[in-house]
Image (tube, rainbow, N blue to C red; front, side, top):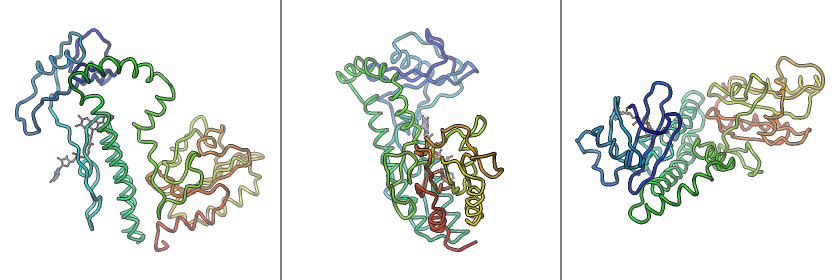
Length: 350
Ligand SMILES: Cc1cc2nc3c(=O)[nH]c(=O)nc-3n(C[C@H](O)[C@H](O)[C@H](O)COP(=O)(O)OP(=O)(O)OC[C@H]3O[C@@H](n4cnc5c(N)ncnc54)[C@H](O)[C@@H]3O)c2cc1C
């Protein structure tokens, strides 16, 4: 809809006033924005009465505490928040994912991302069991990896919703006075922004150690088994995610130690013996002299820093799953152990 008011149309804004929470979300460029308000005394999902623009305008002005005129609405809708979760993600041949498995308030915008990650976690497992006859317990790992994430998401969104919208009477007035004093300055701190970004972006999910996630030896270091493999800059024009794209296994040898050409050849030969049909292989390392067509030489240290290779002689081998999570890591050049780990996901050689 069009929003006519004293503020700009560039920035996301959230308003709290009494029992009203208002959100203004710019949609960019086309002069349209999205507006939302809470109605703590609202009807149910079965409430057949259509939302009227005048009702929304009044409720939103109340939340924003400034005069607002809404017009040209393209879409008006009421929805109720729910808070439900399944106790199992799998029953025999039936798997549940997305809102069918977990549904919660939209506070924090977590629902779609959680559902997409459910699907990303599950589909390669089904494929490997069907095509490569991977052991059936691989499918069980879907539930034990994803159910805790869904539980945590419900608890988190519930907390935010109750803090923001679930207050009435003096608690709501208290929140209206205190929240701007605390949230405004805190949200400008880089460390708070960084943590909030990782939390809301679901980048800090760590799957627990199990049959398909190896032991985490250095839990404080970045890029450990169970973590989502972080992106990093390789050259001015290339990021690690460019190389990891494609929803497949990646076996990556990272060497901060510059490689002599004969060492690079030897690593490439060992990497090529890894079953190429099961995983793509990458060798990232600076060269002592010249360059090698099959070796990716980073032009900055970003990738080494993001993967915890801090000293100039450090090396690591990582096995990254198709859903982008690290399954296995060693802090040396142990490609044989990596290959052994890879075979866990594939019962029959192909
Ligand atoms: C107001 C609001 C704001 C939100 N904002 C965000 C946000 O900012 N970020 C975020 O990540 N998430 C957000 N979400 C949550 C997000 O929209 C959902 O989590 C996501 O759409 C769920 O996707 P899904 O595919 O699991 O389910 P759905 O999108 O519900 O898809 C299920 C589909 O199955 C169909 N279907 C149902 N029964 C049958 C049947 N028997 N046969 C055939 N088809 C059937 C339905 O018609 C539907 O098309 C928001 C939700 C709301 C309500």
